[in-house]
Image 1 (cartoon, rainbow, N blue to C red):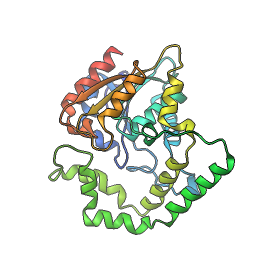
Image 2 (spheres, helix red, strand yellow):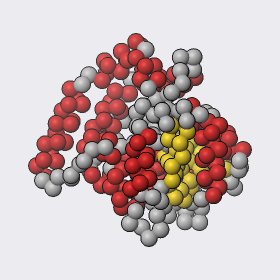
Image 3 (cartoon, helix red, strand yellow):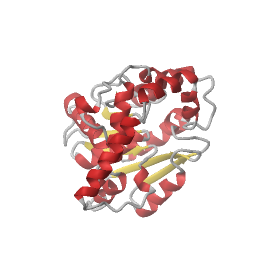
Amino acid sequence: MGEEDGSPLLLVHGFGASSEHWRNNAAYFAEKGFRVYAIDLIGFGRSDQPSSKKFGYLDNAVWAQQVIAFLEEVVKASQFKKVSIIGNSLGGLVALTSLYLRPDLIKSIIASPLPDPCFTQKIIPSKSIWIKRVTKFLSQLFFHLIPLEIIIPLIVRSGLINLALQLAYYRSIATDQDLKRIVRTPTKRYTAANSLRAMSIGMSIRSFEKTGPELLRKLSKNSSPPEILLIWGNQDKLVPISLAKDLTRQYPWIKLLVIENSGHCPHDESPNQFNKFALNWLESS
């Protein structure tokens, strides 16, 4: 959306969502002069839902490579035409990974929020190749034994998916049929189970170098730290605001803005405030 000569802005959705989740944001930024793009990550929305046999395991580095290819081939990004990225949840981690891999293409990122289990776990990367092999084998075995082909349809048909979705919101989503459609439609595809298994294994066995804490540590060593803004809902039940405050204490060059009475998806739950926060920061950065 937006004029072709506008500043490029890429929107990256979170886990279980798709490009449609930016329903309250894309047009706003287009009206403010941006050339707005939104993408369905592999395994989500209308993108392919490949099994690990066909594609390999999915993790934030794989999705970042998809984003980078999109920036190069569709947006035509370069060192003279850098892109800003806004990512919700998993999309925030993918944006961070993309920034680390290709800073020559990316001007700034907004992560809203920035999740990674490794932020709350004291992980010491193992140097033993045998420990890594055993961990990988057990993760693969665990997720292959779980009958996702049965569980996913049950969750969708029973309405449990609505309870899980409610955890991401502070307000009630009971009457938001459009939101439920956005989340439920991809789960009804026959390839959904294979794709979920591929990403579950991929995120559990990825190397330490791909985790959020390690990416931030490496980025902090740059002579000029990158432009990163965190926008957090103060009622986020999935990734608490305390994590955001810890990150900004550890990395003072990361900025934080908090939206009151909003949960894990402030861009969708509190779009007016989110859009203004994001726009002011994008213009100043």
